[in-house]
Amino acid sequence: MEYLDGASEWISEMIVVYGIKLVAALITLVVGLWIIKLITNAISKMMDKKNVDPSLRGFLKSVLGITLKILLVVSVIGMMGIEMTSFIAILGAAGLAVGLALSGTLQNFAGGVIILIIKPFKVGDYIEAQGYAGSVREIQIFNTVLKTPDNVTIVIPNGGLSTGSIKNYSAEEQRRVDFVFGIAYGDDYDKAKAVITKLIEADSRSLKDPAPFIVLGELADSSVNITVRVWTKASDYWGFKFDMTERVYKEFPKENLNIPFPQLDVHVQK
Image (cartoon, rainbow, N blue to C red; front, side):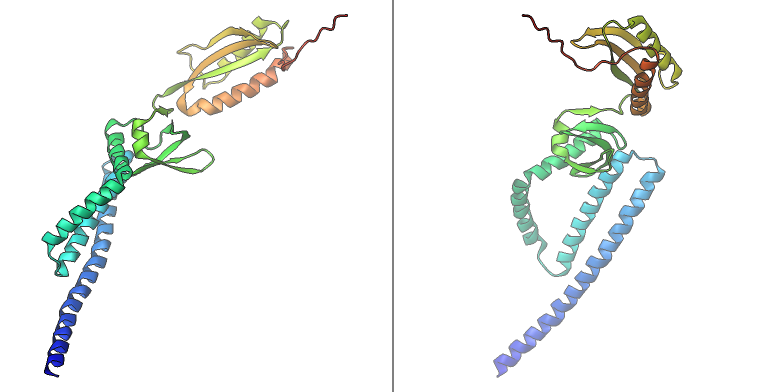
């Protein structure tokens, strides 16, 4: 009985001691997570006021949040009386195993760092990469988030993004709009060229320098193709392209210029 009483007393003491430590650790964890959230939000607001590059804000916020949470977990484990030396050794071995298993994730992290250093694009740019195209919404610690014109969210891992080819349509202030307008064989080419020139000059979005380029580009199977190249602001690209195409389609018939469709002449010989 004395042995059982002693064991019972020892168990009660352990429950009290470790129970208090456990409660204190849980309180520290909850309060710590709350404080980390306040800190990351405050840092984010400070970066907004300092006009920090939007591409860098999300990345730094993610890194700061993860680092603080790791430190908090280590502190909570120490409060529970677990030997930190042994824990760090176990954590290191586990980290090695996890690192080997998540080598792709580490590659994505390194890719995110490379993107922020080299800056092939920034938040707000319209890019095409890895078979996808859209506006850069956010550059995260492991991924880059794109938003397509039809409001679809695309998440691309930074690893492949940092090593693959990227088309950045927003890198330059000006873009060249290319058109090919076809007229029928026998139509007046000079008149067609004059009509196209008039429509370009009437649109304020077309730039005078570089000057518009209009030439007879090809004698195709069913049409005489006129190659047109006009420079405009990058922000006006699609609006100008669509409007110009519509105006040519409406104006050509008024000037007795035919827009041909593919056709085949068959000659039957007896």
